[in-house]
Image (tube, rainbow, N blue to C red; front, side, top):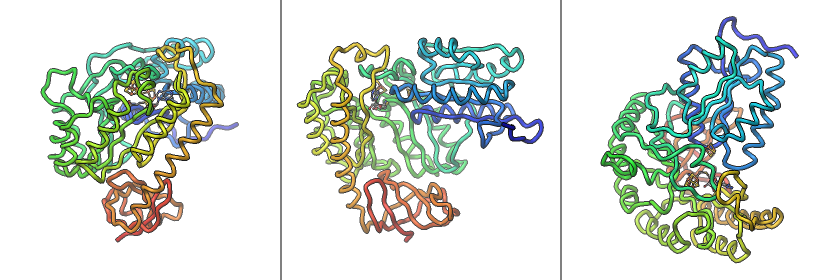
Length: 447
Ligand code: SAH
Ligand code: SF4
Ligand code: F3S
């Protein structure tokens, strides 16, 4: 196959990202660093001089998809041996993975981990000069690296990481091993970054951390997560503040009060529950009971009645009995989530739960999963139906149809809305009357 020609001399890059918002934001930083070196984004992977794959390891299928992609990239590398192939992200923090790449995919040029992305430009330069295979993986990092250039995907909304890492060690989860211990950025640097974004026209920011509720816990500065929200709420130009993700055990009364006091803080909270069984929660090391969680939801709703609550649930954690699963079904019916992500438990090498003897058979996991998804979808549809005929503020995010006349965006409560609208409104907050409510999205018209 012939390669597609690109403008002579212009170096290009292509980044493929798996995983969560943290990884997406890391990819924006890698793009920023590449652009600082004179590279331009390529529309096509085939013709890019540098191909980067930013990996996720949270479930087994994420690992499998990556190795599937490597098979495809191998063919590209055979056609263009001069191109640089770099792999990075959470999978690279695990020795059994980097070993496997070295042995079976020895044509990969650069491997680096989540705590060494700042080294990418140096690694690239060295690789181009010496054509050596290079690797940089650290198992710890003292501070979040500040000031990396960022190529932002959108002009009107932006991710801002406020902390990295996780100290919680839920027994199923690989993240504490791939992202290291919690490190919080100084509130001043965060506020300064957001001021800069506002000056560039950004209206909505999403604060990122594996558990934003423990922001500042390990630091010597005197600012907790709620305090940070109050400070950001003052920044002129910013109209919406969102955050991901909140661990129920650390959610403070001060944060609930911030929802009441800070008009920019969107009325949506993603509050992963994982299971409705207190015994399973104990074995997951979540450090709350079913009752604690239900009380917390009640407390949040007492202060912020129209808040949207979403969650993550794992089905088939080792030892989950039919009774445990019924507890999850009961919790779901009582909380009535706006929406939920559901996952089949996936064994992660190196985590405590991988060693638990009582793994749930796949067929049982699947039956439970289907039942749970049916129940959740029914509730989501009922929750969305409440939006019928309401007028909602929507941040217009993009054109969703090729005719250029249907846009989509999100309500304050994170509901996806489709409506007739020209693309000149992208980036603006508009009023939309909801004319139809479906399970996974709302439809409306501009008011
Ligand atoms: N820090 C976030 C979650 C990051 S991982 C938090 O604690 O809220 C995102 C979700 O993936 C988790 O909430 C969990 O539901 C799911 N997950 C993590 N490890 C998993 C595993 N081994 N099997 C299945 N789902 C898993
Ligand atoms: Fe994983 Fe638990 Fe940390 Fe979330 S809080 S990243 S689920 S260990
Ligand atoms: Fe995946 Fe790493 Fe995020 S494992 S979910 S990309 S923190």
